Image 1 (tube, one colour):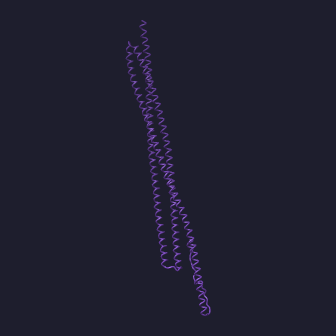
Image 2: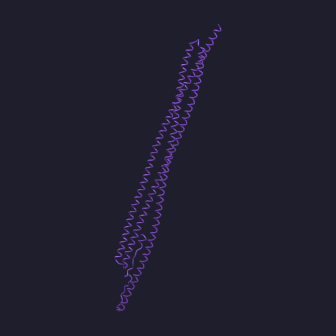
Length: 397
């Protein structure tokens, strides 16, 4: 039972104050005096009842004022909590915008690094083209060497011009040897440059892959922590909504009880007082109208709060969908980047194998050319010995 229900007005009945007595017959004067005394006691009882009613009304008014102050204090505290919650929501939105800006900057940096990687791959392709050109030059030199060997074979058959042919062939072989050595040095330099470029590209791709994995993990952790923060905010909003609804219901219940108590007090006071019936009816009508307005205001306030909470839930759901979309896009972009890196890695591996095959072919050609050069030198020595023998024969004659 509340304090307002405990305060009741129960005036003493005048009949309870009368003493029932049976006396013998008195004179008329004694009867009149007894009636005057009874009327006086009734007036005293009525006066005491009115004073008691006024005290009770004053106590009730003081209690209602105290309750009104408590309700005002609780409402102001609730408004402050709602303002703080709005500030936290704005801070969260600002934090989201900053994170999105950082993601855009990181994407620009990644695109710039991809451009640098493509440029280095182009340089590697240019180096490979230079190696192919050098190989073609070596092949042409090999063909020329074959032609010169054929010429040497013709010169061997010409014994009359053997000495001059040998000198010319020696000079040409020296030139070819110098050209071959220069070509080998250039090919070796190009090969070392290509290997250095390949190692650099592989190191950069490995670094980019490690950075991408670390960045992906960090972004996933940030998205997960932000999702948990939004979930905690939503739970906190639910708690505040429940508290707000409870406080609104308590406030409405208290105001209704206050108006009902006042209405009951006015009705009781009208019964005890000598006020006109029309004035009492107007007062009661005003109180009932205020009570109806209070009920209508409470319903409108509750409807407005429900709309605000629904809008807030929609915003939270929209932000959650945006985060899910960003996470899905990040997964797709990461998968594409992984595929591109794998393709580049396979391409570099294929280029490395091709360079190794070309290097092996070049080494084989070089070995063959050295063998042929050694054979040519042996043949030159043999021919020189024969020439010396031919030159010594006339002198011997």
